[in-house]
Each structure stands twice: as C-alpha cells, then as structure tokens.
Image (cartoon, rainbow over all chains, first blue to last red; front, side):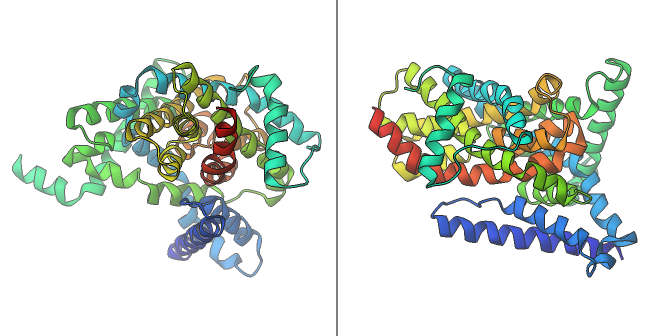
Length: 148
Length: 252
C-alpha cells in the first residue's frame, strides 16, 4: 500500500522534528536543532531494517519515491515564495555580507572535503569553546587575514 | 472568468502544482534548446522562481514572494516549510548508512567551520560599514550565518529592529546566491560526491539555499547536503548569541 510508505515518511519527519525541538529546549535555543537531519537518519535506518521491510518495498516504497521526486518542483515553489524583494532592498551591506559569506564558504568546500577523507584529525576533545576557537583559527589562513 | 477564478481559489494547491509543473517544463525546454543542457533545467526553474518572487514581492509588498498574489497562494503552501521538509526527508530514501558514516566527521567539522566563517565575514563587513557596537556586529554576523539565526540572535541580545532587518537581508542574499551559484561553482570545488556534498551542506547551512543549489547541480547529492545543513541553523542559533557574542564583545 502506497500509504504505508507515506505514513512511514511522515512518522520519521514528526519524530525527527520532535527530537529537534527537544534538543533545542535542552540547549536553550529558540530553534529546531537538526530535526530534518534526524528524520532523514530515521528513514535511512528504517530502510535498512529487516522488520520494516514491508513498509519500504514495492508499492509502499513508491509512496516515498513520489515525494522524493516531488522535491525539485517543491524547491522551485520554495524559490518563488522567498522574500527576494527584501533581500534586494537590504542594500550594499546585506549584499556584501551575504555574498562574502558564500564566497568564503565555497572556497572551504574542497579544503574540508580533503580533511574529511584523510581521517579528519585535529583537536576535537575539550569543551565547545575550545574546539570552536581552534576551528576558527585553523580556518583563517585560507579565508581571511584578520578578525576584527 | 469569474467561475475560473472561483475554481482556482478553491483549489489553490492544485493550481500551484499546475503552475510549477508548467514552469519546470518550460525551464527544461529552455535548458535543452537554448543551452543544450549546459545549464540544468532545475537551475533555470529556480531562477525563474526567484524572479517571480521578486516580482510578486514588489507588486504586493508582502513577504512570501509570488505567493502574495491570491491566485498563486498555493505556491506558498507547496514551497512552505512543511512540504519542503517532507520532500527533503524523502530524498534520504535509498541513502546508504555507510556513506553517511564515511563523511560524518567531516560533516560535523564543516558545520562548526561554516558557522564561524560566515559569522566572521558578516562581522567584518559590519565593522567595515561603520558599526562599532558588539550587539549590531553580532546580529549582522549572525545574519550572514542564516536568515533565521540573524533575528534569533538579534532578539536574544536586544538588537535594533533596523539591524535585525539588515541581518535577515544578508541571510536572504546568502541563501539566494547559494541557490544560483552552486551549479556554477560545483565543478571547481569538487562538489560531485556524497562526501563533499555533506561538507558543502555543513559549510553553507542555509537549508533552502543548499536544497535549491544541490537540486540544480545533481539531485543525487541532495540528501547528503540537506542532512548536515539542517543542523547548521540550530548550531548557529546556539553559538551566535552566546560564545560568538562574547568574543565580539571582548574585541570591541
């Protein structure tokens, strides 16, 4: 049944979103922390579990595949409902800040992809702040010369 | 005509399916005939969507682009957070756990690096434009993280409304630029495998930008980028009003 796959997908999304909200409350942030990502993990786990096989095989699977295929049209609709006018009205500062962040981040993709494939060592012990500072300082040579 | 409008009004989501379908069809036709497939059809469709959004937004003064026009309100539902997240999660169908594990660590590092780097760039630009108080610098830096982190941070540390609006605008510029720019730079930054897609998602972080950008580059990469990107906003909202704000305050 197609609806079984759709229902499984819906359950994964709801469970993930709930987990993301709980994580947000626990961390004291007013945002959903990784809800969609957790939901995706749940779906991946469900797909590889033997007990839920009947929910992802055959007709049930097409219920999930349909929504996966609807992804690009939905993204087009999403683009069409963005607040592009506000972005354009933000002026030069918004333009420079936004595009600067994009350009530097683009430049870091090959750098970090390499770190990841070679094992990704580096100071990852200790508190968040420590890790963060290390991360920030190791990035600087590649990105920009000085912090304010 | 009146009857037509009535039917369209009652079936607004169905209208959206038809309109978006037609847009995608025309875009793929343009991609095929005019660019010989060099520019991906979905990239053209997304740019068409953004242009329509600009037109709709300026015409009506609303905040949801072309969906401000009553006849096209269904596009707002179709492209809204609920169906978008539903479809993003569905793309994970068929993803292998081993691929995720392989890039897991790089993904985590990229989220941290992405938030910090974007924040630093935004903060530097704020300083360059003459802002000298820690609250404004932090809020604009947070806006360069994503357009959600900007206002969340601004609210948390008590920023001026105009500065919050600027931070949202900076985040929107970022998101739109990622949508449009990703297919163009993808060959140069090695964005062609699950691992680099996860790093990409973590570095860019804007869910809509990554969603659109990867869709226009290679739909197979979408689940990997989206997976890390969804953690980015939460992490940014955690770091910007706290650790990053304290660092800025210590420096100013």
